[in-house]
Image (cartoon, rainbow, N blue to C red):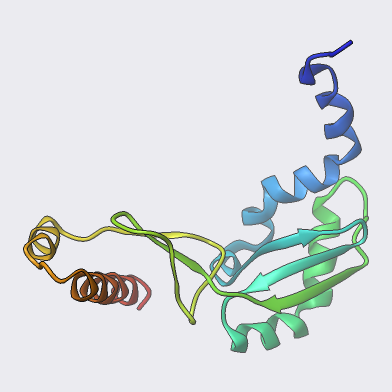
Length: 148
């Protein structure tokens, strides 16, 4: 006999409570470093963090013991024993097309919107390859401007 999923949720949430707590408190735990990294994977005793910039990867590696201590203090129980850092790319989502990737940035999404004037100019271009190249260029320009 099939039972509603709501009957199982409390047990699942209670079992994995510290992981949900970590995800919900991530921004307050890492503060301004949130723009440099994101949670990639949570194992039973290890946290894998994706870092957007290789130079920050090294810095965060040196801060890993402090970060681990801070995370365990915020959680109900000290479950994590190790943190691993991996370099990842940040997704850039353009409103007008599919997601693009930047070498400088990754998993956290930044919304890039072209101006009405730019959209109108792109509509007049008949060559699809040229239109896509210009759209990518404009999106990258807006992204770089936002991240200065």
